[in-house]
Length: 273
Length: 284
Image (cartoon, rainbow over all chains, first blue to last red; front, side, top):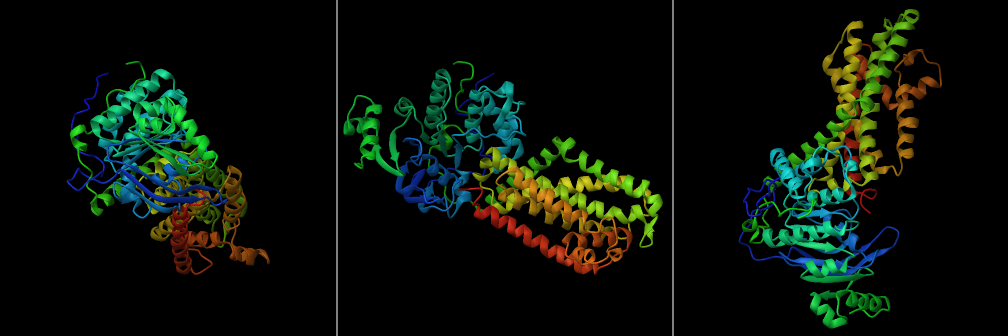
């Protein structure tokens, strides 16, 4: 199985816009985002967040802090928020088609179409995003090789191991060559060896293709190793933000974990920063 | 690198992404992408029907053929004629309408509910496809299943009846039937919160309405209150119009039935699109 050159140029098979010469815009710009569910639960409260183009941004927070709601709003899986969400300048609520074309999502839960094979999961995803059939199939083969799933191309997802399903899910998010990849706990339940391989892959994705990445994780060493900036969220609000050294410097502790715990305990006690 | 390790990132290459994407994504390009996406999701639905043919196509064909064998063959000898025509010929239109309605409904509702229940609908919901395009795709699956099944049933029956009086009318009625019930299937697939709710609609509303829609009898032979009740069954008008197309025999104003069916088809399709767009059951 040969490597696929990361520098090989391909014509964009999906309607992702060609690189242009417009002034830089942020990959993701969220302003005053509020979401109240029908049962009255306030999941997000005036949340603002910026992921710069080409940035690797970590979103850390406990379960129920609003991370998945935030991701759901950006990707169209959660409706009716108040506030503004812009993906490369496109309003993700008012103009969702253009925004979604630019986003690839690897959700936290592994839900894969049980009627399709692994290869079809990828190629159909690309086609839903507007890729030509032949391009989508070629891209599927490319990603199957990249994620070492070639031997499972004809296998249905429920016959794959947990680690393979997780890899397939991440591969699916990248089929249409998104400019912003949103990875919701991509290494949850993955063994250490594969996790470190995924780290390398994601770093290369950002460095070589300049894909902007928004990552949520409960593994703080993962955020520390990968992210240029980190936002900490609790109770639907961003309670701290900065680079790893900035956060450690501001909140103390030799590691990000110490700073995280102090921020969360402070936020829980109503001392947001 | 260990087995299972992702290899270097494939794709456009570093040079392709050196600048910010152009925000002026063309409308024509988006439309072309939408067409491809809709074709892909429709193809996925058709593929599901074909892959599961022992569950989706074979049972309704066997059921309809058994109805024809029992009522048209075994009992047909006793009944001989209804309203002046061969009994098998009389019941064929109703069997085709009930087959299309039942299968179109079942496919759209089951496939959509299954995608919701198992969570893989998110792949579609997070795509750039519009609500109308997703609804259309799920309807295509229902239409394919309904029409292919009815086509097989018709192919089995037509050699034993006198023929088709008005092909155009017969086909138009089956098309409208398919559209109405696949749209209702989409609505049910969005609305249902459990397989029980979905099965309830199919078993206690769609099937009784279909069987009481004058498939096996002429409404003129019924006594009250059954006659009046049948007149309130919307499927009766589809069966009657289809019967007009296949046998030339009808009891109500055919073109009025077709017109009303066309209006209903548009209304339920728009309703399905609206339900999908507002998405209370699809998106929290």
